Image (cartoon, rainbow, N blue to C red):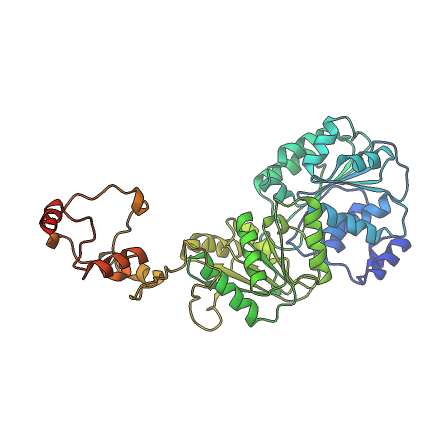
Length: 477
């Protein structure tokens, strides 16, 4: 079956051909004819299956007729993140090149002025995140009574981000007689309830079992120690061992994204970062560099895990094992897209055992465990944080490495000493009646100033406190 068999217009077929596509994906084959007939639709498919074009293409033909009115968009597409909204806008520009459709993008992180101006002229397609849309609606800058086509994209991600109450409010502001399309990778009970409430006798399409992973993606688990600097060593070993054309590295926290990107740059990797603390222009600029090949590694938080369609991503690395099993599916789905193959590595620590078990249970497969290239556990590097790196003694003794001490039984290790105040701030110690009750202490447990005192005052017999009064008296006599 070709796109010409789906009932699309000649102008749209030319645009699809010019974009380099000749055969629709399974979800496009099933969804496009139903959307063109005006039916409500529920589309369930794993990421990377062409869901965006499944609603963008028929929408362009549906909106080809009709006219716009000020402040009243004719159609509305809701996206959970700014990046996804911008990507859908790019699809409309690409496929709608032969149609004269107006479009507005309502996302946070940018000035409202241009967005309000675009709405005043009237738009055929409004692509928005729920937060910014509700903000403008409450300010009276937009009317939804003329919107006859609604798309809720990445519905399960909307649930994760807490947008379901906003979506329910938005749906109540739209005309009751409308066409509604809902797309999601999974169908949890809350999303099912939302669909039952706001969709009218929808056709349900499911092209893959929910939460399954793409069979074109080779998945690997890499056991590593828990320390952050050891994980960075392991990641660098993986990056150097593979021919990474373009790769996305996912972290659970924004602070980890920043630290890891800084470390990778220090070691000569062409990397960038994207996370929620960055303003919208900076995030889009990093994505643009990644797409153009100016950088080939993108360190990201889960803000980039859903729906971003970047061609040629050969590898995905989970620097942190995801907290939620569904996020694993969406993260690794950034590779192996459009029939291509890909590789996904997940660095796992002993603390990740439960998360990995949940992922394997959800996906229904046992993921292969592999060793870090070289077969050795990564050691501390010079980018290791001071609190994690082994302490380097400056004296004559050779201190034991921190990692080695950690592996000894508790009975063989000394208890950690409390942090001590500088010498000049300490109160003098009371004299000890019996020096033999305190075991001698070697040079390896002393800083440089205390060693100097021991060398200047004579042999170190285990006592480094102030001289007792009776000794002072005897010496002065």
